[in-house]
Length: 326
Image (tube, rainbow, N blue to C red; front, side, top):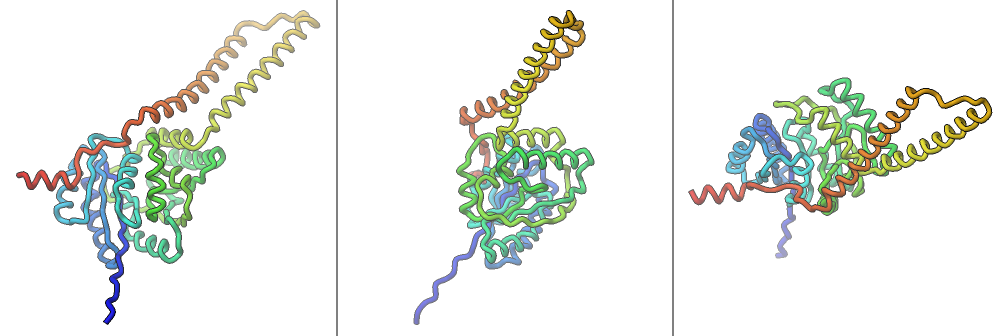
């Protein structure tokens, strides 16, 4: 009698960057465990990235890793930022499919079932989510976000979906392509778009956080927006050249006008207030664009130093070995 070959299960790795999420973690784990039980034909790996949390997040991860052998964690030596956390997760995940989620439950674990079904049945490489509504955003933040997406769409060659979240499920080939882009200055939303692959976008309404507060202040979001522009567009450099050329042309015309007025009408040059205003204005423009050039140079400087994107202080394996020694 011929023996039937056992079909190997798909494996989904869930990457969860964490920064001070001690209140959210038990709720998130309970929900993701429930979803995993509803998907018996899929193996799960839960990979938490502790990004230098100063609360009891690491203790929570230690406890969870003892209770469930599907749980892995990487704890950084300090806070390196969410971008580093996502990269560390992608680099260390072992699943056939890899998802990135937040622990605050604004990325509903229940969506994993739908995303997995789409990626298997409709042959997409990635299923990603975006939200048109942001209930927790202030009016200024909503206005800033809308304007930024319109700007980046015009100056960047990579597609930027308004309201796109980091929550997505990807095939292994796409994950490998992203990991190969090991640049120090990371803007993942742009990288996800840059590597290509067929992506299906799902619109959903993000629920409220179950605990804690957003780690992104308006200033941090502004810096992140600048990072996106510098990483995926050289338009500011082109603009500086155009403005420089424009002011040269204006200056040339102004010189001709002054010479003609002096020769024909004997009209001397106007007083110093207008001249002082022009000098200050021109100086401001020059300093602004010098700053733009400086930001591009600083990014180059950081890249060529080849510093690590993150440094690992502890993993679940380290913790288990230390427990054995005791």
